[in-house]
Length: 146
Image (cartoon, rainbow, N blue to C red; front, side, top):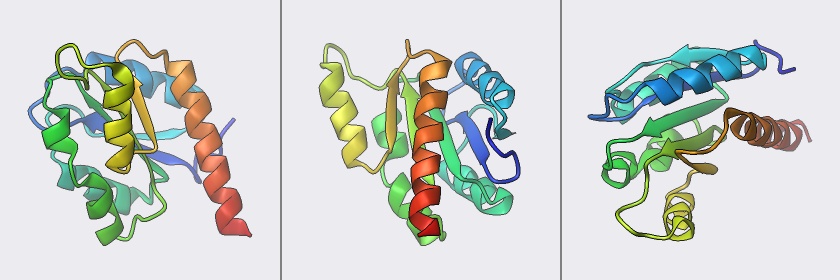
């Protein structure tokens, strides 16, 4: 179990995306696993994710994108987080992130290069995300504590 006060997670779908069901499933799983979820809903601009993360003292931001525009909508997110004082925040993205017939490994590498800590396809199970998030948060906590 995660300490709710320590690990607040901001969630939402980015930009023009109205596909919120997948994120609702992830939010429910996060809540069940003991995270404090700050849900932003659909059609959320980057700035709102960052503002909510600062206000909530969040440990992570989880972004969903099923619209096919993730590359454009998510570019620069890591830099904006750093500018806002969120240099240690865990940043995940998931959904329909590839373009056409692109290999998933190419898509994943692109988002990792953009500064995302976790990149997930639309068929990823919530448990996998929670395991990865728990590990990433534990690693960040251990680094900060030393």
